[in-house]
Image 1 (cartoon, chains in turn yellow, red):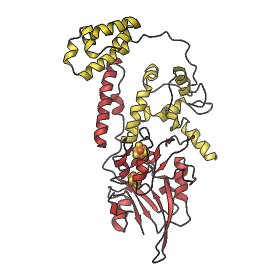
Image 2 (tube, protein in one colour):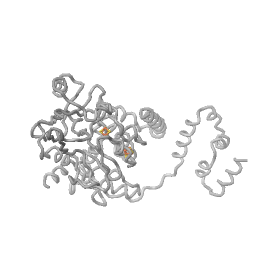
Image 3 (cartoon, helix red, strand yellow):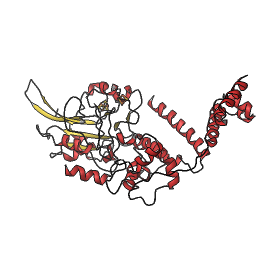
Image 4 (tube, each protein chain N blue to C red):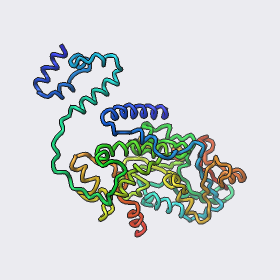
Length: 165
Length: 238
Ligand code: SF4
Ligand code: SF4
């Protein structure tokens, strides 16, 4: 019964992704004949479903990319493409280790990012629309909260400013 | 309770990580968890010994140094952050006056940590009490729980923070013992700035350290010792 309802809903939306997302775990198992899944714990099943959904996302053709001021740039601590995709994980997991455990991983710290990528013109990753962090985040429409607390300025420049006061 | 919460968090982190590795083989969240450095050690207990006989009334150098280091405005209105204050007290029966700096006492059993609903208030393994501002929701329970009135709430948006000292609106903050300096082998700004060396900083657990030798040989007290919070900051001459 469930399955029928789900199928008609999917027909209405005409999207296989919406079809998968709209289904309960049980009906999905039945629909895909994944009997094996029935034997593994629910948490793993959800993780697999997540993978499935992620893989199923259509990839769009790359349009004009934002033009960024990458500062000094040079060799990044990780592969550039990998960093585009995963920098937020490094920052998020690193922050807990640094703050709560005192494990400061300098190679992957926000300060190290800023050291290389702050503009050579204004020593900042956030000051202008094409600054290193702002440029991409604007393009991707992802809100950037880090810099409400963290400084986006290179430490040496910050020290200079402070000492000038 | 707080340990349990962190375990749960780590568990979730790990299970998401495992799924992530399945999505993209290059994604290694584990490498971050095993990053270089041992982190804060529970063998260490950072503390300060403040000699009120050396502290001069009217001198404000430690406070100025703290403000400068941590990017505080230095204003003292009701809504301004103050991490360290100079306090002048007088014994009415004898007329003896003393002056001393007060800041977060880095309690071994911190009430601020007990009351925090989000686990943002926390004590590092080496005894430094901090606010994890990534988690703080600004409820200010900790400010009410602290018997030393050591904490401040940030009321206004901030700009121009020290890159080593992130601070932001809507979160509570207090003396961090200059943790960013300690972690690179330095000492707190107040201790460095005092012209009379009234503030001795060091590891209370290391019997050869200056502070451990001093607390062994001279009389010192904890403020409100009756609360049995075992602060890491001790005072001489009060
Ligand atoms: S002095 Fe106050 S803020 Fe510091 S650890 Fe103790 S209770 Fe917490
Ligand atoms: S203000 Fe922040 S640190 Fe203090 S008790 Fe509330 S959540 Fe915890």
